[in-house]
Length: 253
Length: 253
Image 1 (spheres, rainbow over the protein chains, first blue to last red):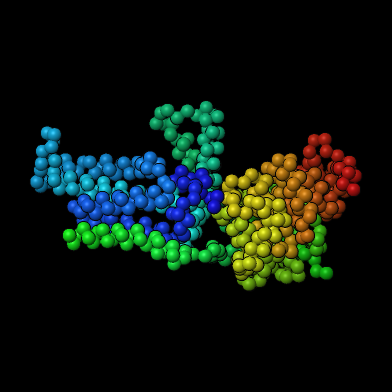
Image 2: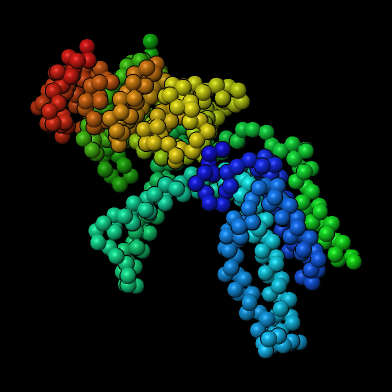
């Protein structure tokens, strides 16, 4: 579909992972993330196993490691927070390169870092192989309440139009000599955010009127097209199943 | 034969007390193409929103294809909204679904059309506006003229009795404007066109109605109305510089 073209998180090519129905990918990603999160933080081998699984998925989806690494940098602010833990933690301490570090804090930082990274990478792989449009379709087929999928559909349709509005308003401001260098000049920016909100609000009203005129009664028509096949469910189930097997094996060992 | 549209003695006052319509009478026969002219604030949009029962509450009555517009009867209102296809001025207000085909299917789906029949309706409407090749595209990625044509298709797919266009030529470049008029001319429906674009009205509509201050002040052949400089002047209507309605009307024949 053409809907995802402009979005930086989607890789527009064909692969076995791209061809899977969106709902099976969403569910597999969700289960994978849950298992990662509940794995005890000291099971280092299990985390290595999860990492290998993601590498396999990335290879199947033909996603390059560098592409993933760049987009995974969104995680950095959270990781920075984790760096403080070994210094601030209590309990037993060890000395490393002259720094006194809390053992408990080190484990805490590791816990945040590894689980965060695995979760972000899994989500990025989902986004890379599924258009926004298909993600919403998948959520709809997973019986996500229609209110949420409708809001997401509208956001998907109008976010670009709003961004265009905002860009035109910015160009118009700059054209009248606006050059925000000092904090007190932020007022014009704040006012245009307000104007943008009003424009969005008024557009919402016009869109609703146009929908009513075409017989809208409160429910959007269900999207056409068949859902996932049993084979697709089976294929995508291997990810959470293998993940769970690794987790259980690691805990029982 | 029943007229497509009968408006009799229609009055309307907005909740803030502004009187928008005072005793509007209008008859449009099946297959006619009529231009609704008038200055800003004359009540044109208010009248249009009465045709499908979105605005109501004043005295007078509106009948579409012999059926009374009765806002208290929901089932009938759905039928009225099928019969009156309104194309709004900003295609971005009308096109809200992620793809062109889904948007064209929205109206008929609200009427309970499903499956192969729905596909056929979408294909037919897109073919009528020459947009078949763009069915899987996102509305945002189309040109303005193409979006306006898709907006016409979204309403055609409901097989309306009367097509109502609000400023169809606004913001179009000359080529898109000509393409749209060629398409509108071939459509086998009754047409009511709200416009400030007097040459466009002359080109497409044999009959014109002037609405000013909430009342119909002139109704007759477009060429005669445009030739009456005094009448136009009284109602804040002006021909573009250098445009000679007599010469243009002669060319039309």
